[in-house]
Length: 475
Image (cartoon, rainbow, N blue to C red; front, top):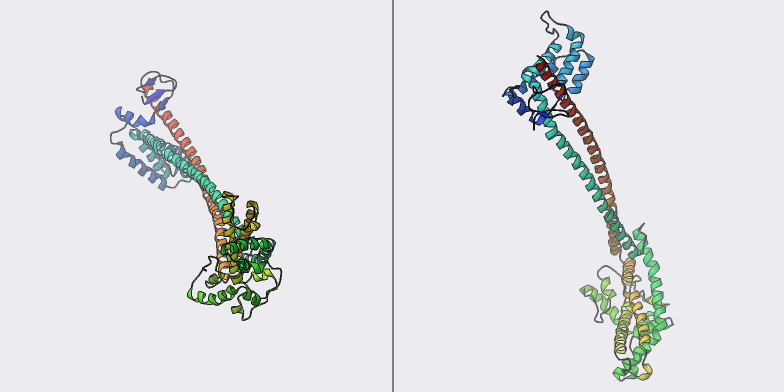
């Protein structure tokens, strides 16, 4: 591809060939090679170009008073080239300082003389052409692509910020969901967790105990009769029917009993009270019956018994109602053992009746249908949930253990911080995104300015070289 071409006409290999009535377009990338091949510039031009910068520096060091010239100097100070030097010299030459000349036509003012010397240095040996060509190559090959790459990087970072913000929105939603789930699990609003946890336990535990008592009293007689009949039949001893499930039998009575009366009817209660302190000291937890050992939990600092035991208070308080009895951890333990025992029995009976409805396993007058057994099993399942369900355990711990409350408050605080952290991160990303958008906008403006300046340099170079070769042909 040729270096010179007429706009709209066939390519010419040499400016002197053909008519010169139209301007010539410069292919700047091949211009240095073209100029060297035709000996229009010296072979050692790279060694001469630093001298141009030295001449420009000398000119900048001299002061000129012309306002227009000073404005041009400030405008082009960071990017001096042949056309800028030419424009500055023309402005200086029109000023009174530039018009002052010696008899030989030389400028007497140092500033005008230095700018004239800089312009002559550019024109000597056509160094102005190669200097402009190098600027064009630098701008188009390196500067503009680098700026485009930087702008693309800024835009990419903005997209990454948007993606990260979307991820943070999901993280925030999940954190809020966990926070709401935790508050729902604890049954509080979360405004004042400590006070709310204690208030919830104080309100919910009596209600749950009343519900448990009502549930057991409603179906207790059927449960005792059904289980007692099977126990008496299995032991071949009718008196066994009145001995099984002693604590459940006490709770289902609609009478007021003192703790002393209950201990006489259920000797295991006194035994449990005597053994519990030794168990606490030895660190033994659990019970041979397989139920929840509330006394054992007390020794770990949880102190589930809100009312305290008779040993702790120094006297056995009167139990005026069945739900008040359930505040005693030892009574709860024995009752839970009875409930779990009859629950296992009902589960076994349900399986037997489901597999063989007509088989006889007990006296005929004690038999119940599968639906009746399942109904009793549902009652026991609800009773177990009220006694040892997760909600009940949480409420008991909130009622008696400050350490547990502090643990829950810490969990709530962690959930809150997890909800707030994405908000802070998104705000930081908003700031970074705004900065990158501004940087991309500034870079695009810089690209546009540099592109226009490069196009102007190319146009001026084409005009300069066209006029040169036209004048040469005329000569």
